[in-house]
Length: 444
Image 1: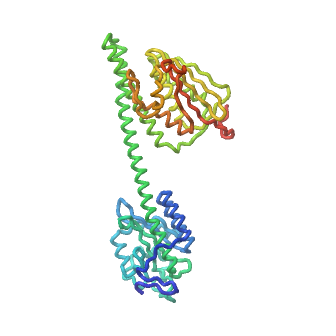
Image 2: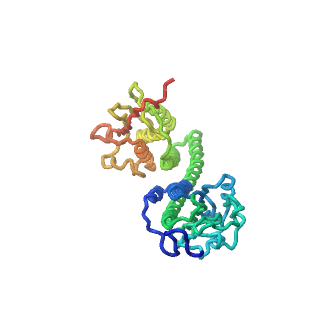
Image 3: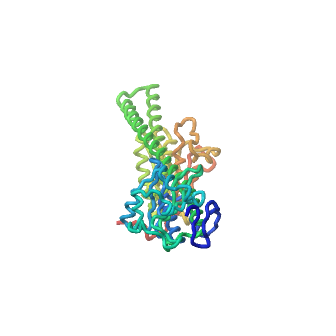
């Protein structure tokens, strides 16, 4: 019985080559490889294809556990529930599996047809795959009849040739030995699945690495914030209690300013990190009027040492856009920028909402130092250079740019007084109108 499967005109002989069979069913697996889906989703789709396209009643797919090195069943099909639970509890060390798949069962490089007659040892957990233990001692009525101890393993290897799992056929629906063509197609599918498993694992590793780096970043941001906030508190307490004069007063004011810049840097890094990591935040309806009122109020609170004077002009109608909670960061960063580059004691700017055909445009016009023409093109870039007399990381407006892109809008900056940048800047943010009447929140 070794090395040949008899019973039909498509007998399978060893080392004859079972790859290169183009069939429509393989296109689904090729699509899976390109999509890089989660491993369990991938394996379920592979099992579906084998069950439906090749009429296999019972099968299992085992994949190596990277932490322990053993192989575990990840998909179990065609068994009663109690057997499924028992099979899922199995573990297979590599040494045992290599011993089971002796060369005498090999019918291709990575395909083994294990027949009952060739078995020299049956493990206790093999019984979990048997529906009727009484049939273990039965003989075949014909050479192509399937025996309950028969199985076909398609070993999957990585690009270095290491075993990463196998697809096991435990029972065909017709209880007949599969034809040469069927074996060849499943072999090809197995090879493609091995590639998809590798891609899926690499994708998951990348996600885990990003998550780990995100955790470290959050920890650093939190710890730096815990250091900076007390520093600001103590410096402000010293300023109020001692009221230093002359150079000491200037130095203390500068120290407070630098500490606040450090805190702003921490918050901007946090915002950038959150934006990158939260692409799937659900979007809902926001009224720009309410958003701006809250942002103006928070800006005034964040700059207690300045007299912040704001003119606000908006339509009487609701100005709905579709966004997420990060929309508050978008406008807070623009308003903060306008305050930062205004006078030492007073910051004056106007905020307005302009009704366009398909977009609402928010305009923020300040009376600060302005932005020269040669700097306007790069002002939204990361770490854009600040004016010589002002400190800052340059991250705030890059946050604005990221969020405007997120909401499919546009942002640009121009002179408040055309041709005279020294009279202040005008930031304009255009966001698409939300015309979905059915989902808007109702006023109470």
